[in-house]
Image 1 (cartoon, rainbow, N blue to C red):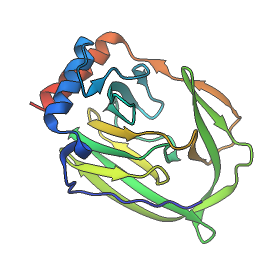
Image 2 (cartoon, rainbow, N blue to C red):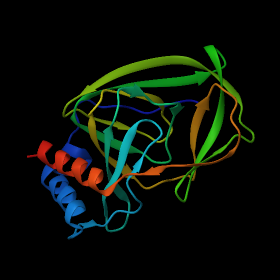
Image 3 (cartoon, rainbow, N blue to C red):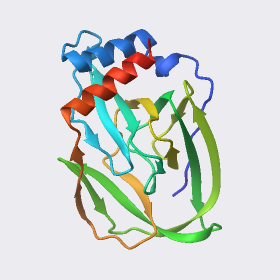
Image 4 (cartoon, rainbow, N blue to C red):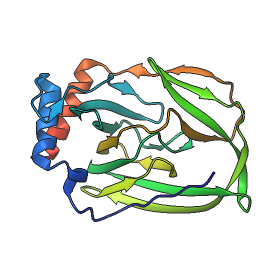
Amino acid sequence: MSAHGAQSEKPEAPLAGLPPGLARQALASALTGIFEAPLAPPQGHAVLHPNGFAKVPVAQSADASKRLFLHVWLRDGEDSHIHNHRWDFTSTVLCGALRNTVVQVGPDGDGPLYTVVRHRPVEGGFRFDRSGGRPVRISSRRTVVHAERVEYAMDALTLHRVQASYGTMTLVVRGAPWRDWADVLLEAPVVSGERPMMPLAQGEREQHLRRALEMLR
């Protein structure tokens, strides 16, 4: 397994083709619950992600090929694990800053030995599946700092780890999933099974959406 993909500091269009006006419309619709074309109500619920941020579904396209999320870091910290995704995405930093470390794995790597585990979404959380997981080591690392109003893009197979400062907010435009799992690299032994995600209180969800809306005005 290898990491690949590209990041861009200067996108051709804001929010990966989602104009700021449409982003404002999406955030306002998420607050009121009233959606108009080309936006549709999002799937899923706002949750507290294990990696330290609030994950708030905002809106999606009518055909669900694009989904918009708001991520808000609730503490200074780093992702629990190196991971990739089930979908390509573009992320715009509304405020704060994050450090994105992209890694590659291979037989010539050094450092700790990791086990590749499959991460699958389930109702109310996610599931780790370590059956067939193989050991790997990191062969290269590259860190990029993304500050306010920087946009970057990443494909689904890129392995990375994010470190963000408290209060950092990003708008994430996700493409449609093209597989039903993501890869996670774990150092410690892990037991296969389901893990829950805690729901985000309605008042906190609305607070984050209002703050993001202010950032775009």
